[in-house]
Length: 249
Image 1 (cartoon, rainbow, N blue to C red):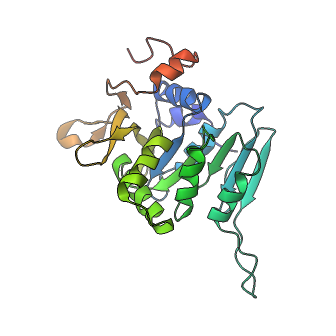
Image 2 (spheres, rainbow, N blue to C red):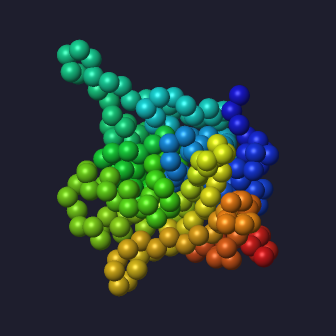
């Protein structure tokens, strides 16, 4: 039985306030990257967020092994396949992402980007496939940008600035999960990919929600709280009626 958003709120993985914000992002067709270490709960959160996708939309999921449990009506599931003994018949994530663009998708969900398929995923997000979701291994939202940049460089010989411009125009939100020493898996940050620094050309990532450490020597973790930063795309969500004016007050 897959976890629901109420389960994650009960586990203190995320707060109801932050969960409502992610719901607005999914319904508002923001492109979302879920980052975190191994076993931090990236696929679980991806599965929970995918439940917000309206039932009439055509969804294509691309995974190494089928882990997503979705109950919408229009779902096309695609899995990778290893080559046979003759070295033929191999289908990698990148092959499936490229093929999915010809299948009239409303949403593309990639279980995890870990290679050259990162380029195809970014290009899909930049060519009208809004509302796509994927995960990546990274230690922070900033590290996720650097790792994504490195993966794209594996696929194509392109100037670093051009790669960063693609990332900035493609992605809207980065959700970072952390598995702590006590075994709990919690959302530690929700950030916006805000743009590029004019001077050094680095990607600017602004935290919308963070989980501060409190108590003596910072040994206790607080709840996920709003930093006060209003994302650039908030106006779009307000126009669509997905957020209220006092949502961040």
